[in-house]
Length: 453
Length: 138
Image (cartoon, rainbow over the protein chains, first blue to last red):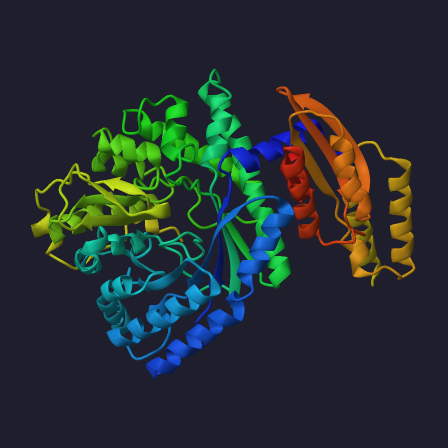
């Protein structure tokens, strides 16, 4: 037999019974040739370009998935940060484009589009001001449009004026979508060191150095890692790292093959595989459960950060060899509301915001899908964002905040977002104020680690 | 086609066909492919020849192998290799097949086999060998 029974049965078990799927095939599209001073024309240009490249992607992905015998959960689009597309820098321009793109994406069968984004790490352009002004309405009036702002980088430092604006837009969006658990905020993320090829929503955008179009792959796979760990309860930590590396290799390899095949089929270049473990609210598909299988009683216990560090590092090491190019965020996501074990830990009071913040120093992104009381002060929110982004800036990694101040809810209550976004316990946030620090305004200069030349 | 390209394509064909123990017919097939390539008679289809793996798992009962090989034969799908075993009390049959000359396309074949799986009360998985190759062989 050209394949051993074990190889065949192991592969079937991985694809069938361990919640394994490729989380997203994301098509990046450049919009640099779509600009127009006339906003209707600009919106039309963007829509036409999306149609041109994205129309055939869903069926191509489905076919590749059937051929390979795996599931692909989502197809998504990442656009050039819309603030870089030249049009009249007025909020109405971006609302018009957003509505047009939302419709086209729906017609073509995509569930989310990323890229209503601004890069403001070193300051604002007129377009940035206009877009930031438009974002709450975009997130409220459209279904599929996701937005992100890069407010700091290791090279440029942290734009505190930008952070203040972001805190305000998050509160505004929470209020506008108050009848739906303030869910608009789930479609917005603020970054430090945002990457230009991230395939995951809400932070996906098609960065400026990218080709005209590109296929990027985002993986899932906590279930596969979980299963591998559970089958080795006696392994010491060095052995555990090896076990995780091997499982990560397999998970990543699947992404590599899917990317290659889809790229070939559509004649669109293959970009990167993002090897992040991305959980879903389903039982057994949880990064929190992986930590528990490693021996942590519940996420949030002392030792959680160390376990997460080991996990993230082993996932990266195993995944690196499996793909021709690793990219995106690549590590482990810890979105609270999308992860059954994290939800439980937060609900039981074991997982505080402060512990989550510490964990983000060693995971792939940051405070993700965290719900806090709706009456949180803007200054407190800005302080939290500044803290999280500073961790990224100093440590030369991506960090982010996707936070939902749930209108009308108090700490301890539960908010349900439905579907992949899951349920979140509203978490306590300190009310003592960083206002006098934040309101000084201005810019935190880049750290000394930025000087590498 | 330049020589480098031909060599590359030959290597690809070898990779597609090379199992651990080479049956006579596979060797003949490789030889035929290579000859037709060098003579410039190969079509794109020959280069795309991909094997697939059919796995059937479920309660053991008589006639399972026959039931599935019948569908393969009807549709002109070549069985390259076959193996069966009992895993945790379940019957497991694994076949390496060559669907290149199949009368029906891959997805139709997959559906036919899955339908038969329902009748036989077993689970059926059909996939091209890509995953197996890439996950288990470095």
